[in-house]
Length: 269
Image 1 (cartoon, one colour):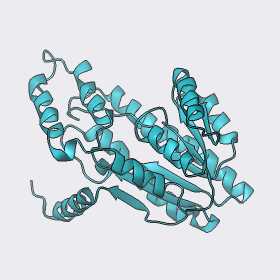
Image 2 (image 1 turned 90 degrees about the horizontal axis):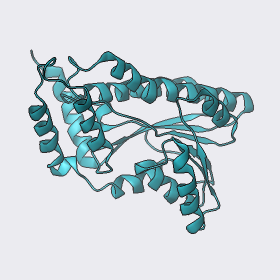
Image 3 (image 1 turned 135 degrees about the horizontal axis):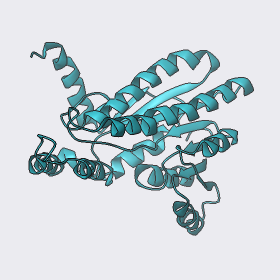
């Protein structure tokens, strides 16, 4: 058991964030579980109360609201877990660029704005905190039709690696968590997103072909893994005082990514 921490989690209204927030609080840490929209606040507060988790505080933190970000930066905590995110899928050569920009805003620029303020506050106050980023297996490779989303995670990987080197002298630690394609509904929702803009009268990509590619992936064991394994690891990793910088789960995906990166050196056109 690590020393008792106070952990701010973004994107705790559903999926990994919600389940891990509850699990981390059950382990005795203080948790500030933040959700994107106000209607998510009361149900999570009521769930925490029913579980007897008076150490789980629920607040709204919409990263697109600058006042929410300023308020969050004023709270006291020693672990920031940037978990909130959104995904755009579809062929990168046809996706509207405004959707690409928006995906970067939500997954990269706004979490980084939050992080910059928190890190500076910690440095000024002498807090030896930790920043954790939910990246993705897609932060380490790029499959066709997922390029927009995974490129935001590639960017997060680069920022996190730079940050780790830059703030080490202040005693601030940095980690990434790289989940495989666990079945939380997140990837499935992302796979639906292209069909709101993909127009066969304008685009060459066929809707049925794209849908089949997504469906075929989700039909594989690697495309629909039980998320409890990842949740259990997040509950361990986020509060821990030591560990690996990059945390890919499960091991079979870590091995696949290492093989892919090795093979990339011999890729031909």
